Image (cartoon, rainbow, N blue to C red; front, side, top):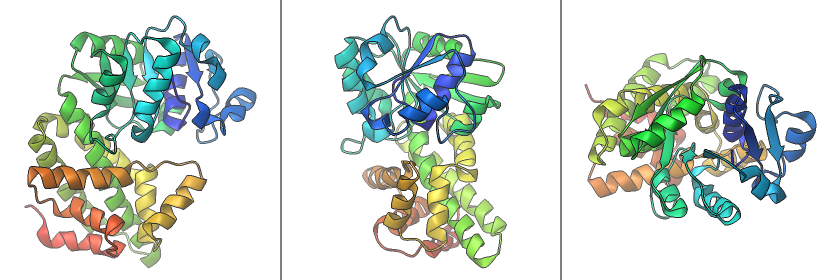
Length: 329
């Protein structure tokens, strides 16, 4: 595992528990959590200790960390994916099979993660992971179901075999574009859902009817977006779309960011607050990305567009409720 963020560490913990010889390599960007990983054998953001079989190595130990690897799992968030891939390739020379766990697009190019990794490693044995996978639950070994997508079916099967366990179930899809675009849109939906939660905390009301209606609208818009970009409708209706949108709307960093907005925080203020707690909110860039993708495709997505207006155009967070006036039946 290259990258020791919360999700990367949780995945490394899972792989080590399956009797895989697993190394967690912390990059320069992970120095703040390295003492906790090596001395306390625990990631500060996760609720369970590291398994004994998991080896932790620091930034200066890239070569030994990569020696003899069969699968390189890349743990960077979408904004750091290309940088991590280049660092690892410079230290290793080649990577036989790459599994990317980041959910999002490259900021400047809007390229999907599989496209970024394919360009950097020089082959298409690249697998992307989608579905409802919260880091804390993976770290605890709680039941999880994920979907692996790849342009090469054999690569997806090999990765799935390494990950599968009684607690970690894996489905495989050849709809790589659909899988990866789902991982972008669900982040935006989760921010909108979180805004309603924040409004409820302030008012003492639940907004359950509104949240259900907006969730339905978010799913309909995600479906429209992904299909317009070349993905399959059944992918959106499965773990990668509906499943991941649901779990992200119930918990996680993007929903929490939205909750802060619903309580009255400004977007930058909320981002800085979560950043101080070591949290990266990929949904902010995802909101910008979805806006651009929808614009290019000529789509009218009122709920996802409202989230964009709240984050980047100064619209009050409470206007997310206005989307109820334009619901699909």
